[in-house]
Length: 84
Image (tube, rainbow, N blue to C red; front, side, top):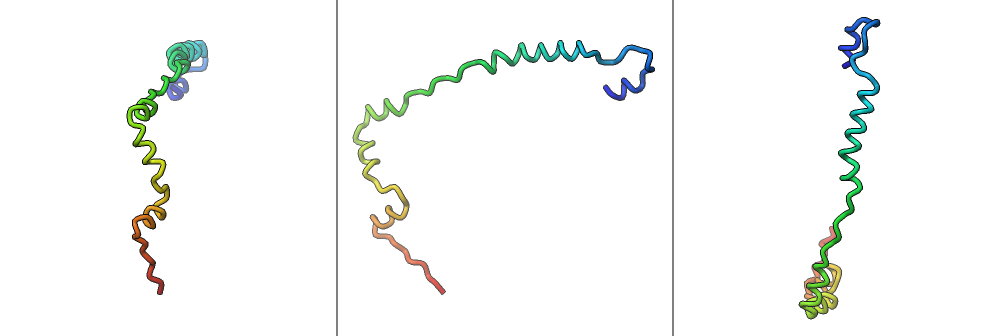
């Protein structure tokens, strides 16, 4: 655009008018606004249905050790590091 404008004489009409830019901006806003204002979908309640269907699974997970070190100690697999 800039090269086209520089090639034109100063007394001729410009290649691009401000009202053209404003019209394109309004068209873009009209297209984008409904998308941006669309509400996010509600999360599916999968966790609640699984918890209700299998209550024993949640209890066994709560009793399991949380850290990897605790899991190793529970299994009796504690490896010591060799130090030089």
